[in-house]
Length: 390
Image (cartoon, rainbow, N blue to C red; front, side):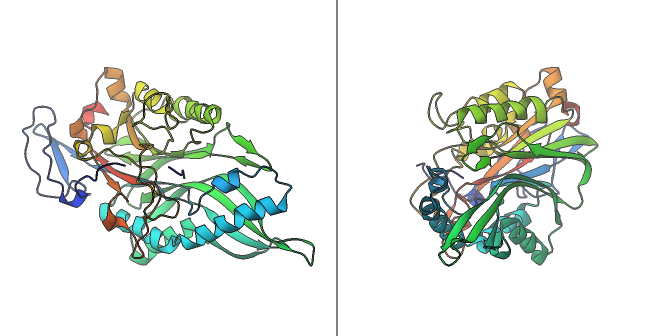
């Protein structure tokens, strides 16, 4: 989540079909949706390539964390309550059930093979004895919406990040804290039930930032699945913000050289990388992370796909109250792909391999009450990489 204008692009559902050129195959129109899960693009005369679909979405925790991170003295109960009370009120007003329904509707429409979700917060309100008396859980809501629709998806991986508890009320009769707000940030991977899992791994980045009594911790989760006999390593992650450069840079290095280093087959990074590809070097939202991943052989699906010509791809950020008041002006959410075979052969992936669209940037994506589903727009992408390029 970040607190951050671009001309509107044509509504994605009204976009003209874009022809595909792969190798020497002739360009032709496609009659079906570019995201139809079962469609096939042809490569030459004989090789069929089934699309591999992904969706990445920072679901937004529901409130502006700025006041929490601006607390100067964590021993001052007045300062803490002055930050946590309005934050929790904002989270409760963010209509998590309706926003979860919007994400699940998109999953149901697109039917991606795998999904990366960030900022999947669990909030628990605790009494003075630290017993739960309320709360909200974004993952519970999403899983409930999936079950209610009978969609063929399951939660494959859940990686916890920052976790702590802060006073939410003061009880003078004790005297002491009357209630606490416990919270845990998570990165989540969902998968379609027909997808075969080959391997998985997950963890927290060693680099983290100490903020008084709590550490700001980020994590990652990798699900390796079989697709057409080729391992596809799907990595969901959320890097630290650009406002803490040393921690961000260290986590990016862990991601590039550790988490995805040395993987064979197709590797996909999907998440909020907090590195603005639309900014000039030196701008506050810019970091070298995006460029470093490109230099390491990763292709930016949005920038490469034909749909990129229809808009800027800006993903961050709507106003924290999820109403009108701020328009996304950063491109920090990505689907990035690397083929070990293509890198070894010195081949560059081209626009014919990819399709990509945004979710959460069009007024029709709003909830019934008029809220944006998240302060970030999501990216839905499909890729068809020729067998000899994998």
